[in-house]
Image (cartoon, rainbow, N blue to C red; front, side, top):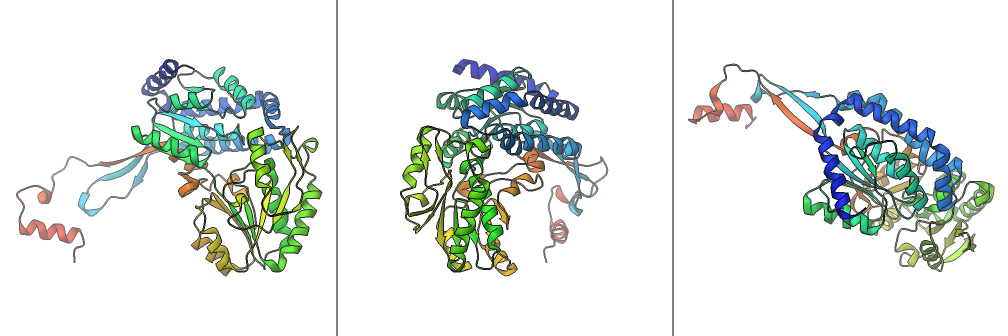
Length: 459
């Protein structure tokens, strides 16, 4: 789209938003039901598109993309009346008699910029929250998953009026032009580097922004951990989508006393799960650039499992590394691929110190049977979210806000948190027209001051 066309599109959405149609809860529900129906009707179409982009199977596409969206929509439909209702709050003595309430309202026209690694879910999950809150939206899927981007454009743009919802395709140029338009909210999923660009653009127009970023998310395996469980959960969480998951365990801090046993358990589960494109449980690296970047990172440390690379299909087999130092290249950036470094860690205090050397991660996974160590790590380390004796699955609970902190993100969504992210809450104080005690009105005197001090608890 040209700049003038994008401006016209956003202006048309602003006009439609001002018509007040989207504020009607029935309107929101009907369109969310329509979205789910459209996804169901286009299930095979979407499977085919994402398979072309990086070989993702129907099973994993459903589990990590369409199934998540279905649950999100059902959760919204179940709870939207409550979320959108005015919330009465108690008043205080200084305002007696009065009624206080909080009134949610949509922000307006929102720009949602999706990511390539889960190109359906990460474009449409924010959209579901956006629609639930009563907004209009322009959705910009990642151009790196080009087939899925085109499929989303077809599915959305042929079924919804563009003055309400519209998918805009394109790359950096189109995104740059979109950031110049008069939006009321930016929602971005992607890298920290691009997140900073989005944040700067938002600052120019004081546009509220949510940034879902990433980082080096650790898995900490203490010496009292159930080793088999830790290995199984970490293998699944790490090599899902070939490691191209923002909350995948990036590296493992492992107690030396259980390290060899842990490696053998990793080897067992990697072999048992049999990760291959043909087995519908593995995918290609998204493009040649990322494939070559990962191959360079594989020069760090010692490969103890895996290490095979196939450029023709952009496949890197699940690989585990030892003899890794914090200064190695593989530890200088989010890996975002099927490479798992193991680093010796002798104590809880050492684990906390090591993780604290990096920016706050999007996720943290702890494997331990010690309540004391669990509480110490959860209390002392800052991270977006995570799990104890589990990986990844916290994202599937809509009652848990999903988002990062610091360099791993700003804001959160899922469930009611998503509704709040795309809403403004107006605070209203309503008073009956009755005679008042004239303490707040001039002229002021000592007696009025004494009354105000008493009301304020000044003693």
